[in-house]
Length: 250
Image (cartoon, rainbow, N blue to C red; front, top):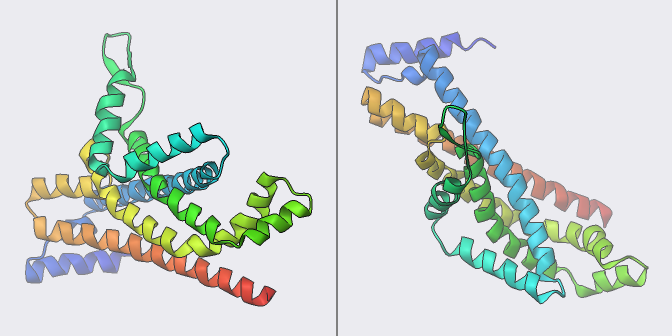
């Protein structure tokens, strides 16, 4: 698809109104911001999947008979839910990262884990702490008779949870899970503090070099709006699809 007319329109807009959006009509700036957008999307994709896995595993551990595992999980939840995500990013990247370095042949100290990886790990654990409680509440909302019936039919506890309880809990947790996902997209702007080349970081660098603060942050805000609204529509679509499956099954 040829977007040249659109880029030309932004060039004309600058000539007629003074609104300078080189992010669109300059190929170098446009490619930089496109890569930043892809970085943000890639980060969110990793964090969404990892946080859901953490939530499911944590909720399962919450129902475990092993008290030590339950206490460890509760400690994890309390730490990540009650400390600022920016502090957590600094803790992972600067505190833990300072111990995970190797020395190259020329004597330079190089970190083993990249800033992008630390950001993905931290945001996944942060969102996962909320998802544990979301999945736990969803599992507890499923009538106990469902699990008892599965156990009576000969399924193991793990099979009863995975095949009977979780599918029903999923329909319950979709709305709050969607809200958590949208919050995570907005919180992802904090990774720019670690130098991750996401949209926010590129916006900071670009506006500082061009002094186009108004134009730049309007574009940055719009791109985050695209991601959050797109994600919200996907969650609503999934919720509607699951409701249709229940109606058709009934």
